[in-house]
Image 1 (cartoon, one colour):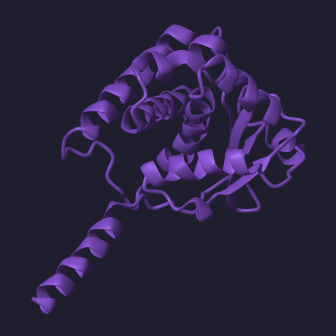
Image 2 (cartoon, helix red, strand yellow):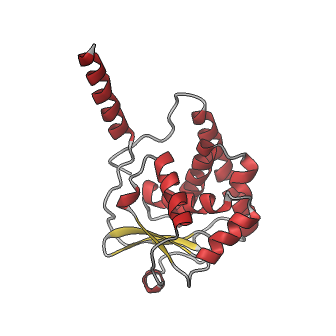
Length: 209
């Protein structure tokens, strides 16, 4: 009996390991802002102030990483008081996600506590999905990933889309317009909501991610 229990324990560890996302070292620098500040602004990204995140924000980030099967310690997470947005990028060969504290607080207040999760999930999506040569494709994948995590966490579709409804705008050089982005959030949310109640996995860890 003891050997069977030990075997089951080892199998559980292996399954957990195999299902984790593999955060691949970035091949080059990239920067993405959640809402309409363009892309490839590496100098601006590197210039933001970086201080340790608040306990509240760190909890949100760790919770998202847990749902995404991502090791939060593989990503540098900072509070940036001079940032009126959230951003993901690479600095000194390491992935970083930055958040503006006033911005995140405002989103949570206006979106019933789900706004901060939604935007941080979008930035986490850039790290998990990686970056291509197509900004619009990258943003679509990050929006879908945000919707997916919101569905997996139990948010309603309205809650998953609320931050985009509040902050999304017209098309720019990296982002589609609000209507298209809301659609990709909806697609991700459907996958996450379905996965929450079934054994089907839409996102499986891969060394290619």
